[in-house]
Image (tube, rainbow, N blue to C red; front, side):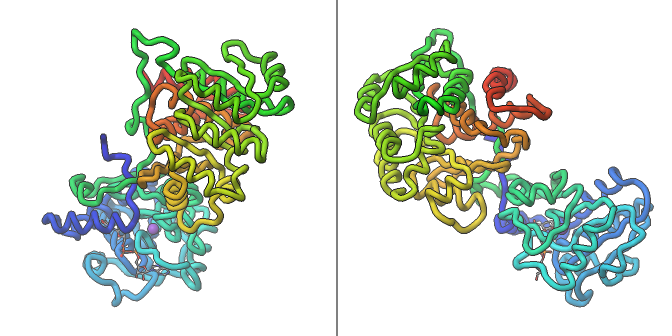
Length: 491
Ligand SMILES: NC(=O)C1=CN([C@@H]2O[C@H](COP(=O)(O)OP(=O)(O)OC[C@H]3O[C@@H](n4cnc5c(N)ncnc54)[C@H](O)[C@@H]3O)[C@@H](O)[C@H]2O)[C@@H](O)CC1
Ligand SMILES: [K+]
């Protein structure tokens, strides 16, 4: 598997730096490469006018001094302003500040005018507390300028691990980062503050990753492989997925789930539920089959059919004891399971009952797909970044957790996780999550492993939104776009 989609926390990035240095690479060479990459981007994207470089007290500021020198060599008018004491700069940052042969002014809100482009080299990976006082005023003044901003590594004030704003943060047009992206480039609100993210190689060898063993990636098709259609296959080899229907007045959600599962390639899809619900479903479906199920015992009986290998329960399933009993019946069987919406919220007062039922069958995938509200109802308030929260929920529940949002995180109980960033905002529409559950189930039915199916499902879902493109998307449009996405992925 390629390592280019690996994400490194600032702490892991520090280790990468240290390992590179231990392997004989000089640290000032890394800083020189980083600062030069910033300068080259500025020269290319913003070729005219004065460049104002705001340097901070650490190595992020050091990158700024390198960029200043390089841009001046390229013939640009450059002004450098430092937040902090020149005498307190240390190490490589002090070295490159010495090499800067122009004036260094104090970085102040009233000294920002005149530049055509601004480089934010105030704080990067070393941000370790809230930004307050004079620095906060400076950042607010910078954000008030109508000048393009190029951030070095991350926009100052963005936590590279969590993507959170620590007090206040620069709003950049472009962020140039080094070696590998950081979670904070993809998690919200960090992603929005970064603008475009450009990755620069600075001479750290990929081999350092062998020691760091990172287990977080940017979701990408390189990370998983879609099920292949075997020439001698038939509908049963492609899996039979059962989707639990909602009540007679709530049939739409499960129907979208079922349609998505079938479009994703499940061999057979059956909607199961009360007779009264299925009469409504029957008016709308053709290729999808219908199977009356009257409570948990009859569901369990249905699942004795060994050809049924996947069940989705949750979309408009209804809250309460009946859904709980159905979920436990599903988990007691051998099927791969997707738990969404009401299937999760029904356990808000007894989450441990759900978790122990999941953990009792570790050999069968369970994927749960909560949005933030459902997540909190099931897991309570959990500290840390979105990645931390999804990981701890996966560990606690034993399930693959898909914590949804514009920055969906998928985490497995073993700590492996991805951040997904291909989903356009138009996907935030009623029923979109029902379709996602169906896509994941369609992949599970074809034999994909739980974590891979969840990652691929989230990606495919995002791409359907991108294919639609403009406004006016409704969730019913999404299943019809799945074949085009699959075709692109299998090209
Ligand atoms: N790790 C690496 O491999 C490389 C790192 N480089 C640069 O080095 C940066 C990291 O350098 P540092 O670790 O020195 O960290 P920073 O330069 O990001 O910041 C550290 C300094 O900021 C202060 N600080 C932290 N939070 C603050 C707050 N809220 N308000 C005011 N001051 C605050 C700290 O006290 C410290 O003086 C990276 O972001 C990158 O730009 C590059 O030079 C290339 C190589
Ligand atoms: K910065």
